[in-house]
Image (cartoon, rainbow, N blue to C red; front, side, top):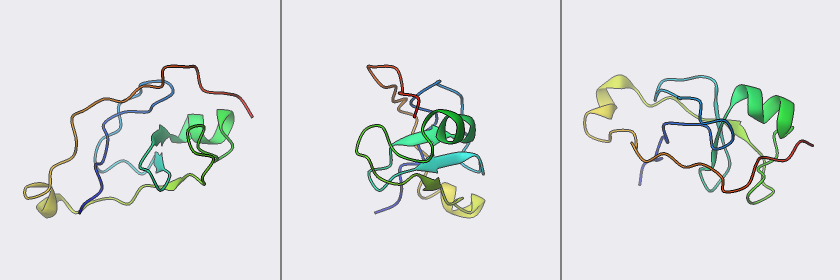
Length: 82
């Protein structure tokens, strides 16, 4: 099963393209932009407490068979500042 490659940051709703090198995820695929992961979250997922790491980039040729998700996920509560 492929990563969802969610299209946005759960904190600030910034758009994150499938090839973004500024997308960070935890093992549950919670997705955050580099600014939120760094400045607000200190690379700790506010949902599960897991480590946030840079999301891998799916090769463009593979996006045809396994496209990125279009479902936007936004936290119901503001992201904490750590």
